[in-house]
Length: 221
Image: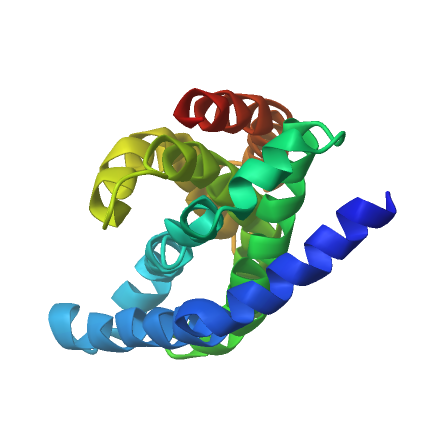
């Protein structure tokens, strides 16, 4: 357990140094939200209606930043080989690295989402729904992305290929995340129906993705 805690702290520090960490993700998130009114016009009713979808799509794209470096930096400096040879199961190592990456890059997006939602004329319930859905949904994006990062670990500039591989698998998370965020401000679907489905997707990703990513990393070895 001590080794896993030390690995978590190491990964958080590295994530904050490489590529700007959470700060770059938040800035990219802000840019995407800011340019949307220029694209669709200043209609506040329209912005408030599609605001949850805009925030979720922006969070999805922002979460991809730096995800290709999840294992690639360890592969380049040889520390990935050392991690494979430790007594700690590789699946646990992958899970800890994913949690550290989400803490450094995904959690700032969750915190910033309500503030950026005000720019899209979202009301209080909608802001709460977006924040809650992002809180339980963005970890699934990170764990799903870890599979793509493991598959492209030996490829230089494999970020685009990684995005192409994992984006189709994030569609269910996006659907239920937007549904939960939209249902929080009213609608025919109760909030808890898509929200619990989103929780189930996240738990499934957290349970299965470390095994798939670990298998891909062993194959690279």
